[in-house]
Structure formats: structure tokens, C-alpha cells
Image 1 (cartoon, rainbow, N blue to C red):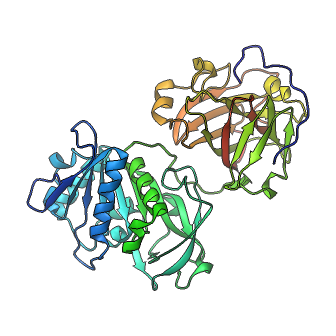
Image 2: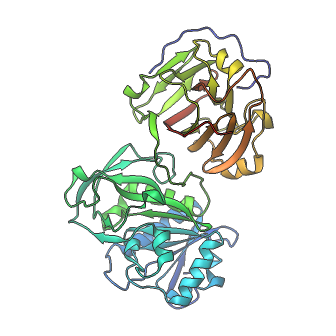
Image 3: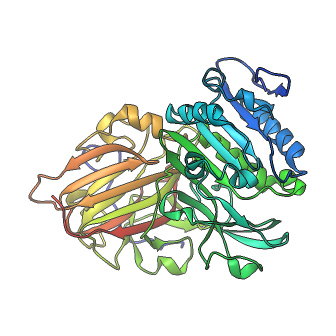
Length: 452
């Protein structure tokens, strides 16, 4: 919402449509090698099985650096792991490393690097590395246990906002060597994609089989993908995009919510069937695209979830501005009573704004007209127009907290006796004819009690 005294009168109706390393073993390349740019170290030392895809993997990361604006150094020299040298890098890629590849001093240097905000990217056999180093096991997320023969399988994409998976469809059919892991990382890490064990033979994780994940780990960022065994993987556009997105997040060029996410149920999962509980109030509409994305058009109206009211909950959803100038306008409404008039949400609820160009109390992350977000935190957490963002709206009693891509940016308590956050509906705004904002994967976890 943009105006201070409301928007133009809404007409009720409209249907829902629906090696720079010091030492002899290093090599260096990169399209942007300036010292003030982002820099990545690819480490591919092996002390066990050696994948024949490593050379093409190294070359692929170099190519991604050239197109993505980060310099790339490659080495198999463990002497690169000193505190001084690691400070040069925004992330270290463990590319199908195997066995014990670092000594105790080198391990200590890498631990310090991560704790001071460094990034880690693990590819495939990075999970078959350093079994006796607990810090590394936690960083990678899980250790390798076994694998069946190389074969096709279906990957279920669970998070379609993270840059490693945002360009993928909900299912991804491809051929690779599919690892089983000694433990399930889901409770500790944020799962981005998992395997459908019914789509291939040899899965041993009882139907919950994460294959790519991310996490904030002891001060640093960690991304792991189990994909990438075969040489052919590195020529596959979807895999290259997956890998590029993971690296971009690890070096801080893209933001995402990598906190563990468990216990949520979908309110909108991208299917037409999941829209059964939603109603359109007012003019305008939302279109449902083939990729499971809802995009606003026309306005001013509201697509609201009429099937249930909510009292104490964590609501997550992914959103993206489609316009290049960032001046698209939309919002998420909470705490309003049922009504076919979108103004009911305006007058009785609260809007969490999406519009990065307005004044502080009416811009992205604000409780519209009531409380600005912490703009410095918001700006650091916000992805630019055209890229996906994730909101978490946490309501406990009259207390509202807003997180953007995993970063808390607003904290608001309702003191207006005419309004109540503690009992109401949620809705997505379609603001106006020139405002196009897309939404994906609206999910909720109801919390015990009402809080304070």
C-alpha cells in the first residue's frame, strides 16, 4: 500500500485467475581478479577415492566466476590453509575431496576462518572427507555412508527461494550418483532439495533423503550439494545454475533464509488445488503460472485465506518484485476479520509492506504506517528486484516480528484496542495495474499459546 489516506475506492469483484595460493600446487583464473572483488578458493585434494570429474569441476567454477563476477583460485595444496591466506577468500569450495586432507594446524586455521564469517561450499564427495574432525562434519552437515549405481532419480525441490534452487521446477529429473548419508541434516540445516527414494533403487534414508542444504554455522555460511559425481553434471545448465547460486550465497552476493525449517504446513504450495481455501476480495487478480508462482495484477484487491483464522504462528512465504526498478508494490496482511472488502484488512489488520522505494514506515519490511524496519539490516538482507526473498512473520499474542531472508528486521507490539494480531486472517495484496509482485510457497507453523 502506498497512499497515506487509503487507495482509490475498490470495486468488489474480479475473479482469481487463478590458487592464488602460495605454493607450487596452485593455479589462478577469474574474469574479475581485482583485489577488492569477491574471491573463491577451490580445494580438491583427495586422500581416498578420486573422482575423474574434478578437473571439469574446477574449470566449471572458474567459468562461473568469470560470469558471476568473482575471482577463482584452485589448489590441491593443503598449505593454503593458513589464517593469513584464507582471509583472502569469501568462500572455500571443497570439490569432491576425500579422506583426511588437512592436518591439525590447517584444520584450526579453517575453523577460525569460518568463525570469522567465511563461506564453505561442499560438492558431492566433500561429505566423504575428514570423518574424525567434528567441526567439519557439522559444517558439511552429514557424512557419506554409501551409494547405489549411477542412475536417474527425481529431486524434490523443497526451497524455491534460495538462489541455488530458485530457478528449478518443483521436481528435477536427472542422473547422478546418489549418496546415502550417515545422519539426516534436516534438524540442523535448511534442506533445499531431497530425493524421491521411490524414483530410483538404493536409497536408505527411509523416505526423508536430503541431497542439498545450507546453514549458518558457527559464524560462517555453509552450502552443500550431493550432486556432481559425473563429468556430465558440469555441462548441465540446471546443475551449473544450482552450483552458481550456492556459491553466490556462500560469498554473500545473494541472501536466503538458511535456518532449519520444520513443522510447517502449506497454505499455498504452487498447485491450483491449494488455492481452494483462498478468496479474492476487491478488483484485480492473481495469475497462477506453470511453475507454481502467483503474480499480482490490477488492484487494489486482496487474496485472503478464508479457510482458517490464526492466533499464534510463524508464517513464511517467498516473494519477488518483477520490475527492474524495484518500485512494484504489494504486501502481506495479518490479523484482520473475514470480509469481501479489501479495505477491511487495511482498516482492521496490519500490512507487512513490499515496496523498497517508499518512506521508511511504508517501505519493505515495515508494518505499514506504524513502524519502520531496521533499514540497515533490511538493506543487507534484501535481494534485488528479480530475485526471490523470504519473509517470516511471527505472531505471538499482540507481538509481531518480521524476518527477511533469515534476518530479523522489525519488532512491533500492537497497542491499538481496535485491532488484534492475536486472532485473524492472512492475505496477499494486489496493489495496482503497474505493480507486479510474485509469491511462492506460503506455509505456516502454528505455535503453542498466545505469547505476550
